[in-house]
Image 1 (spheres, helix red, strand yellow):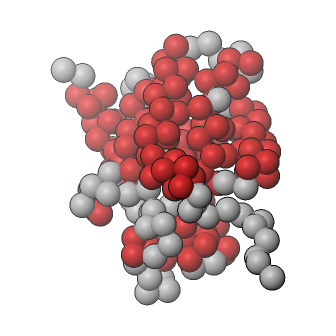
Image 2 (cartoon, one colour):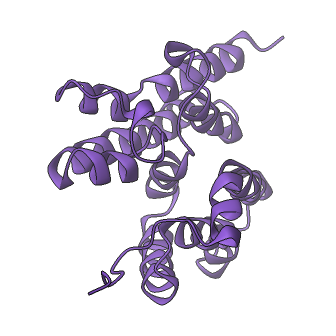
Image 3 (cartoon, one colour):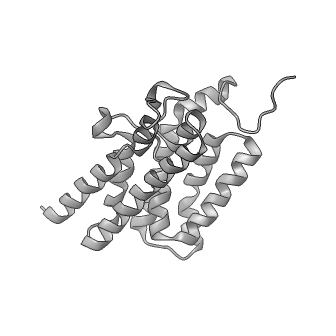
Length: 196
């Protein structure tokens, strides 16, 4: 057994488990799990607590991905183990194995491995959100397309392409409640005009 790889995997999971969005909301005495969509993520923190707090949550969640990617690289461990940070974010040991949807943490991984690909991915997210007015749709489309974006930037390592392909599918799975609400017409939209 490769104990170094095992240790790296455990550390990546624990890093991902740090519930920044939950802790940031707690600064205002709010349990983010009981408000808004109930999701432990930066988008819900922004909607419920405010933009400033949402930005803090976003920085923390992205930082988890960067830290996990750096750790696996520094230890010479398999890079795919960094994806366990997303698993930790989604099923945090500190929140009784509940959590968020892993979008920001996945983007943190991408930031470390290819910042140009991150810029394009964020552009895809923005364009999709503006077109559909659904943050969830923007997140799903952007993350599913990451392997293709990486490939256009010359990233051909199957380990990374496979990692981000798996994380893209995980993103869709984590957004299944959003998909249901969209189909029912009850999902929150941004820039939606209020009825007069």
